[in-house]
Image 1 (cartoon, rainbow, N blue to C red):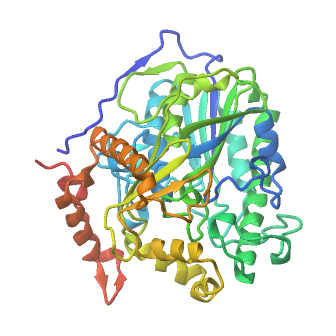
Image 2 (cartoon, rainbow, N blue to C red; image 1 turned 45 degrees about the vertical axis):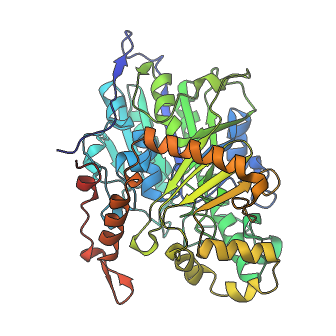
Length: 483
C-alpha cells in the first residue's frame, strides 16, 4: 500500500443542497498561453473571452504547476502538484496518480450532491478515479471533428440537470496541429504577413510567423466555440447562478513554451465570472495557480476544506479589496513523453524567477525534440541573432544548475543572472525558498536515488535512440515513497 502523504479533511456545510448552491462551469483549452485580446494580444480576435473578462476577473499572473496536458489537468482536479499526486507525465505514456483514491474535485462535488459532467478528454490515469455522471467526446479530437457537438452535449447536460451541476468542457484548440480553418472558423484566418512571432522567441522568420498565425487562428476558433457554450448557458436561464472558470492548460507547443518552466510554458489565461458575486471588469495581479481552483470551487459550493491541498481559495480576490496573499508561486517539470525527461523545479516572486535543473550541464532532450519537429532551421536563424539570444537557446539546450531571471527587465528570460555576484543574495533567498517548498511538499526527487532510478526507468524503453511505450515499465509510484 502506497503511503499517501496528503491528509484531506472535508466538512460539509450544514445547509442542504438547494438552488442557491452555484453551478460550476469549468472551461479548459489546450496548449495556449494568455495570447488573448483581453490580455493585450494585438493580433488574435477573442470577443467572447474578452466579454467574459469584462463581466468578471482576469488574473494577470496565473500559472499551472507543470506545462503538460495530463500533468496540468491532474493538478487542478486533485489540487496537488504532480510530484504529490503522481501524474508526472502523459497518461498516454502510462503515467498515473499514485493512488486511485486520491481526493479530487469530481468525487468531492459528487458526494456533496452535484451532478458531474465531462465533455472532451480527461487525460489522467486512472479515469475511474473521477466518477463523472455524464461523459461525452472522450477523445482528444485534435482533428477538430464536429466541434459543434461540444455545445450540443453541453446543452443536453445543462438542461437535464435538476440539481446543481459541475461541468468540465475541454476543447482541443489550440493543440497541434495548428489548423488555420475548420468548418469556416475563423471566418478570416490570419496569414504570416499579418503577425509577428511570439515575443518570448526573440526570433523572426517566415516559418515562425506562419506557425504563430495558425496558432492565433486556433485561439480565434476556440473563442467562437466558447461563445456558443456561454450563449447556451444564458438561454438555459442558469447563468446567474453559475460560476464560470476559463483557463488554458499550459502555454503553446512552441520552443520555450510547453514542456518548460519558462513563462511561455507555465503562465496561462485565467478568467472567472460569477454574476452578483464578482466585481465585474476586474484585473488582479496576485500570483495564483490552477491549484487554487479546487479550493475555490469547494469554497463557492459551501464546503470547507481544512487541510491537504496545495492551493487556496480565490474567493477573497473576488472583490476589489486588498488581500494578504502569497509572495511566491512554484512550478515544476519532469517529462511529457519518454522523449523529453529533464526534471526541473522553479519558483518566482513578483520580480525574479529561479529555475533549478536537476540534471545540470547535460543535454536537455526536450530542446531538440521540439526544435527538430517544429523549427528545424533554428540554428540558421540564430546566426543573425544577438549574443544574449544565442546564449539563451544554448542554455536551454544544455542548462546549468540554476537559471535566475529578472522578469521586470527581462520578461522573456533571455539573460541568466544566477552566476553574477551582484545577484548572489537574490539567488540565495530563492534557493532557500525553493528548497523549503520541496521539503514541505515531500518532493520525491529530493532523494538522488529516486531521480537516478526514474531516469534509468525512462531510458530503459529506448532502442536505437527512440523510445517505445510498450517497453516502458513504470514502478515510480511504489519506489518514490518506499522506506
